[in-house]
Length: 169
Length: 276
Image (cartoon, rainbow over all chains, first blue to last red):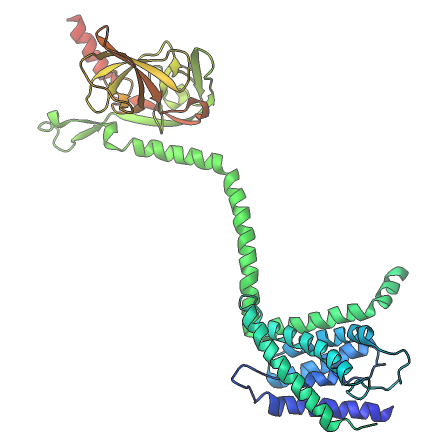
């Protein structure tokens, strides 16, 4: 139990530092900006209560905001993604009995399941984020195009990290 | 109360989400100048739209008052335009500092009772002898001649309208200056009859008919209407025309009473000339 907690804390810190220190500096073509930190919300343990998911989502979002000097923008998107997470899990859950500390990753239910699961959350997070960032619906197609490109890149990074760091059982 | 707590407990997840999301969006609005300016701009657009609707309603409610103000203004301006003045060039040598003497004054007022249905229609105005109205004064509206004051009380005046078979108005064709007598035939309130025009002149549809100014009542050049049809083209020596009236008597509200300041002088002179 403690190791799960510790792993999540470490993941939190690494993802925030990675996001702020590296990924925010690489703006490919000034257009694409991956937001890998959402992986923290994706990889929270299944059994964590809903209210705690929301608070943790807010925590990592506001942490990114502090460094980006954009109070509330990342927090609101991450809370939205965290809110949807419960329903995504409920909709995609393939089996009944889960190990209490089981964490969603490519090994849990396979690559296809994890792809669907993470794609929905990344999609929700990025679209919400880019819309709040633009804060107007006049150039919506441009905003959605930016979001889409960033989603592709974020998904690529998520799977890269999965293949690099998730150990075989 | 218990139900409320149960409700909150049952929906704590959604409620918490709404709270945190609201907090986040509040932060977005509060600390990001770009988003705040967008939000304020769009809310001022909404507020502006609502305000426009309300002020439109407001303006509509004050239309009556506005109309009265405009009518007063119109009366004041008409008192100042050249046609309200009589040219005194004949006396230029004796009165060097005043080329024009004011001949007509306009008193703004409202029609408070009106009819177009009977064959002899009268109007009632909300001004009377207290306001300087006297029998025999002309009544005009912005679009043209309305009638002549017949009787006055301290606060009201009764007017014989153009739509009254007892009223004859000296009317003139604007383009050639020939004049005749305008009466109403008691039928359609849109039309009056202009008769006694000489047979040799040419009259066309839509020729303007104006007051001649030969009586002491109407100023010269007040619009009466336009020629609609030629009823009699001179078979008995005179042309008779049907004239479409410029004034719509069915929706008459704001009018002006015309006071001829030189009427007494003119009448006195005419009487004297006739008696001699």
